[in-house]
Amino acid sequence: MPAQAASFALFLFCYYAHAGTFSTYAPLFFAEKGMTVGQIGTLMALIQVMRILGPNVWGYVADHSERRVFVLRLTGICALTAFSGFFFGSTLAHMFAAMVLLNLFTSAQGPICEALMMSEMRGNLTHYGRIRMWGSIGFILTVTCASFILDRHGALALPWAAGALLLCVLLAALRLREVPRIEHKGPPPVLMQVLRKREVQAFFLSTAFMVAAHMALYTFYSLYLEQHGYSKKVIGAMWSLGVAAEVLLFYFQGNLMRRWGAQRMMYVALGIGVVRFAMIGALADSLLWLVVAQVLHAATFALHHSTAVTTMQRWFAGSLQARGQALYISLSFGLGGSLGSLFLTQCWENMGPASVYYVASAMVAASALAAVLSFRFQRLDAA
Image (cartoon, rainbow, N blue to C red; front, side, top):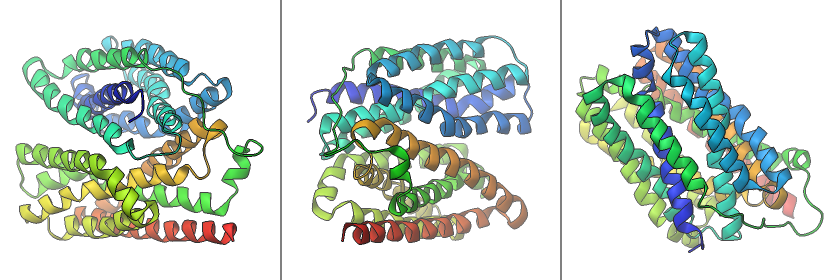
């Protein structure tokens, strides 16, 4: 187990606790501030949009300064300063500026922490899942606790709850120590040369399609279940079930990767993803099948994320460590997530709610095709 395992786990716990609490309840907070549905949608979209910019800006600073822990602490201070904007003002312009500034800094913190973890593990990701799962635990625990706080004090209490968690992120960053980077053999790689490789381009295309498909869940799942007559308690339980399955997968991820390897496990995750989204579209009236589909979140998110991070180590290490993680977040969750959400919104409005999940299933199939090409290009280039 890495020497800083407990510190990494604490940081990820706090980071995803804040991210989960704020993103889950921010729409309610903005509604209390008098925002319309369209305005709330615009504000929430900024979370994905800033994932395109923020991780790359701070990943570049972290790699070139070789002071990744300092950058984590600096972004923590800046994020807290930006978050103070939610305590006053209620206009759209004010909230827009606060969302841009907050997510400019917070969107970079997860990738930089994971880059530190990769360096300390020296390429051996056996314990990655058992550390990363604490982020999921932080998410589910604090989202649940915050629901009781907001039920009692109202949605306007969100800045106090989320702000306290953001302070915890900064305090957790103060526990981290700098880690020497894993250096490439031979001359340091040039980022643009890496990005020109066809296997890298196919890899990022694959991850972008996979995240785009998951926007069917993150954007529409609660509304979809509500339209099928499920109560808010059932909807909340389904979300909790998915995260619990994710935690278990992260715990056993090391054994799976050692036995079967990243390539096979990625194919398994993608194959399950095709089936899972089709099930949600076709079998939404059956609670039993929805439970099965939600358990499969362990594969489509946790297993896929672990295999993607492992695969990236082939290209992004040493001086490219933080920027590699930043690109993964930006291209997959930022660009892929934003475009996926927009496209699936059109599907919902023009073809009906169930179509969102059939299209998501097709997106996972496209992700699988791109992954096959990426691994094939790797073999050809190595020959």
